[in-house]
Image 1 (cartoon, rainbow, N blue to C red):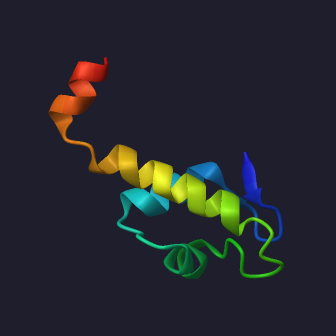
Image 2: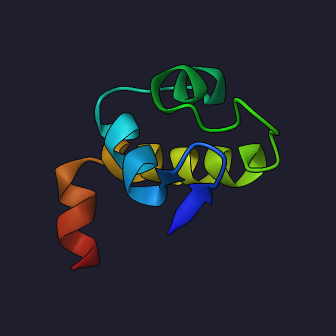
Image 3: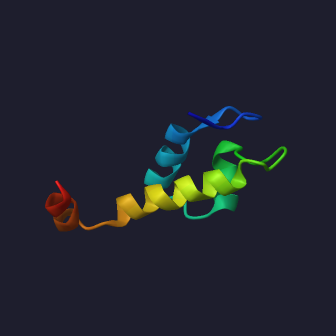
Length: 67
């Protein structure tokens, strides 16, 4: 799904940025361009980044228990 229409940034782009170590919305903007124009996507982009980081930061044993 497109998160930032202005710059064509998708939720997949945000997950990939998180996997690459992106830690903040400002860094996400620098990496992907999300929010660089009108900024209306910043709340959603920040939520998706946080969600992707939380999944990435879980220890493997927690992920195995969830399955």
